Image (cartoon, rainbow, N blue to C red; front, side, top):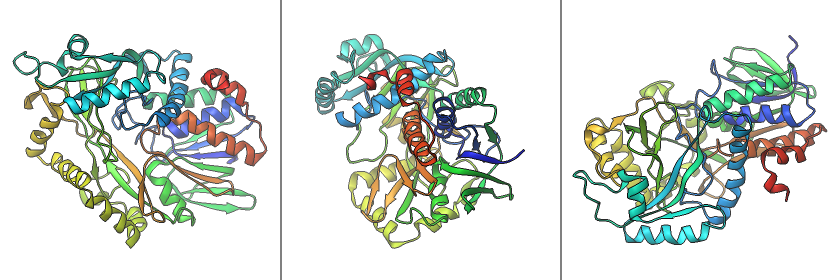
Length: 450
């Protein structure tokens, strides 16, 4: 087989798979390859064990401003519409209630004000007082002996919404559809990219085993590994990486839907939330915790053998040390980091986590909690060495030379089709190919055509 392609996509997570499908469905590019270092698709961050299985559209994520929520809502609607168009209900996408709750007078005032502001963005967004919450999500109100918790509790959300997503199965569906559209596409498994080099008027994508494939354009969607690859080619040297790993606990099926709590605005990490697991039936997942660690992939190896030397090379400088030091001078962040370190300790961690978990389920007992071993994954948080700050959200390195690097921490999975569209625009413009933009919007986001 001749290994020349129009585009090579590095990374078989949901972002890379979404791009493969988008290019196959809406452009006239004839040969597209996807390379994946594992033996199957979506085995790292997009794996069903690695994330909270949520379409984050901004309705209940309390750290989103109204401006960001409007933007994220359009991105989320694209994958929701894709899944429904492909009849993936109750296989890939799941319907359940979802809400953000405030506990105590201060948080209740925040949720009430936020609900009033966000109603216009999300038609059908419903406000739940304590009595209504007891009716539709009783476990967040009832204490151990069946009495109502004394705190005031209110919520904002939906009693029914397509908001659960198995991103692993979504990835597989993207690729299945893309291969059906174009038999010249190819997926390479067990292909760990060692380097990317110019070769005549193309790029050579070379594996650590010496295998080579060629492309006119290379798009790197390799999660935590995107930045090391970029820096190996001399790009993104002004950036560092703070890998943060999330852990989860299982409890019995105590929640009927997704329950999110109010985010501390000083913390750059997700607040505790509860999610009925769409992969393991009969379980509710609580988390995530947030633990900084010197790894680009959490469960690949154990203890010090899993240290990523690419990460050490990236971050071993005074700029990154200064940014991390500044983060730790903020008391809320420092306390949060130390608390999450304790969560990982045997015996003590489970007991400390129980105290936080009772904010969502006050009747929760220690015996209800089961540490979800092997669940959770690293999310790479970008450190900007020039601005000397932690940069939240997605980051892109565009070289304008036919190779681009994406870093997509959570909620990058929700934005996979939105990001695929941005990449498709760049790729088709660079290659002089055609992108059927109008059909993309007609099928996936007709609201944006208006």
